Length: 481
Image (cartoon, rainbow, N blue to C red; front, side):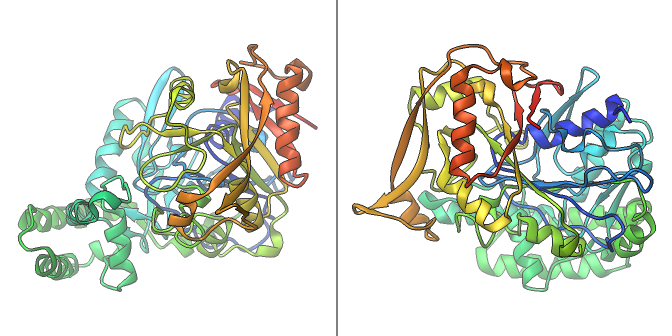
């Protein structure tokens, strides 16, 4: 079956996650699917997008994706991993800070909390368990999307009753905590994600489902505010205003809140399911560059746990790797180029964060990180993005090893201060100095561009690069069979 334009649009989502190695996993739709993965974080080097695609009568690819560095949500490039999705319901999981931009039918949409599947009129969307939700922003963003003509958007979006509420109080605390860190700031988005997850882990957070219960939010919010006031002193925060607003949200939010387990069970026979997450692996709370990480699990494991997927049903895992490296916010970045090279990558790649507008830090591709990510997520195939951004370089460097005090490191360091001190060993490859924008066939690439792709494959231990992104349009993609 030839994919529709809308189906090809969803193919974009996986590709311009452009800075990282994203992770894709194929699933058997007959397996039990009862949940959504936890995925939020501050910035990401690889974000998690998992696609469950298939048709009961015509089994197509079921693929999920993740990325091995520090980026946030995807912009609009192409990943054919979902090009052949058949029409039907799709479910997206997105976190509040997961800013990304999508251009569809010449209209630009900015997403921060809502799933980008809302662009499709046939798509049912769920903000799932494991996320944190800033309710005022939920409604503000929904109104903005409706104003741009998204049909019945408010009837196609739901929130898990187990998602956590992110209050304005959390944003205030986020800023205070960053100020205390001074020169060692994490570089958060300032949206309160970390404090919200801290309250969740401390078992004093508020779930979305509790917003619907009379008096629960007020009592818990007052207790939270009192605790933070004892810690920080007087807060520039209007407690009574937020309490009043949540009295109103109790009724306003009700149509959107669902029992996720029952909801997913009801829809698990849908022809296709897209799970959209926020961050890349190097922002994972356990495997990332701690403490410069987000507050949740961003790898395949988080998706399996959150979705309660049967691990034995995973058929393939697709890593989406940007052809160079980027990072937003603070933290170690061994291959960062604070020079003309970094400026050139930033300018050509248009590397700015959607949610914060912050300039992304840029550098050479780091195969040490990519191999580390592969060791955790076990990619079976790679989607390489933004190859065209390297078109104008005379030579291209790729990090292949780290040294510390003259000794070769055998593995990716767990300590951020160690990662900050490593000496990067590069291999220098010749550039191709010709235009690859829009190339759709392998033979259309210059010889040196082909050699660059093949070098990455070898460094990844032979994991094949099946897709290569060559531009911003959905058809700017090479598929190698």
